[in-house]
Length: 456
Image (cartoon, rainbow, N blue to C red; front, side):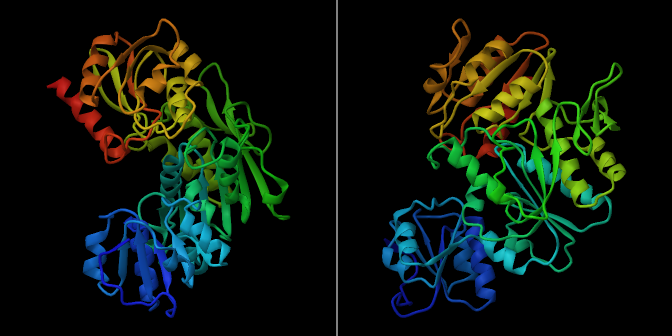
């Protein structure tokens, strides 16, 4: 262990809260706890963690210890607030738990303070899209709505008496420590293999998502997703309501898709709400996102007409099936946020036409075998890059054109040579970005600049 600031607190004698992991979330926790005049110690396994300068500038009295964790700091803490990026299987945390030290996350601190209604959104894919869309819908009817959690401002920094509705995007990591957060409505959008480097198996990962339902008044459930719709009775309160959404024809009080000779429509039961061709969002996965947002808003009492007006104008988020350019009748689409196999499959199936797929990166112990048949049906060619490219190559269908490249700029050049008129060149990596990029946004930005270079 190395100490960036000199040890001034005796862990065996002082009463302190240990913040594990700095970064944006850790800083928000420090800010919150110091405002309460609590003694805080921060530990981070990275030598130069994100947020270091801000901590030094604003909280010079807070000790920061970097490098290998000291078990003494953990087992002598009054309580521990752990950032989502740190696994609860970390040995120092396991030892602290054995010593009955309370281990919580920033969402738990938020739960003690929040006064406005909360809507919770989790799932493998689509969280940010649904969170942003629903927040816009609430704002349309005059609510001071704030999107927070795993998106934008950390929850503790978003606390404000003027807020009328919190829309929280919650990852499975954030839900791991959650004890109790009453919610107006909550949804598990979908479940596909992700973060299997952190969870024992897909069932354990799915179970971590279901925590979001435990204190929700209304459970919004994806009827089409087998794992997401398997809600245990222990997760449902006695007074909880359920609203389902589906890409099929809906039953009474369900949101779904009604097929018509003129245009398919999003519906509530038999009530037609909006024609699919009136929406800016493209792809069947985005229809699911739209239906989930409508169901959550409906559960929160938002008027349907105002929600539909927002939905018709909503163009989606950057790096999520984002149309970058059309060059010689080839669409270049940035779905850098497709960091797992399920998201890549959703993009391949949801967008019309044949694809030249650009994929690869850090696999996170994912099983790519589900890609085989989908690539066979929907792809003209595949361009692979990154640390685990060969793992993906091993499951590509026989006869598929597969090229390996050293970087994303080269991938764009190779994809251009493989694409035909009417095709999509789709960046949907099915992998994390950290082997080559700072994050998925950085990866998407490099793709965009590379495509723009083709235009010039």
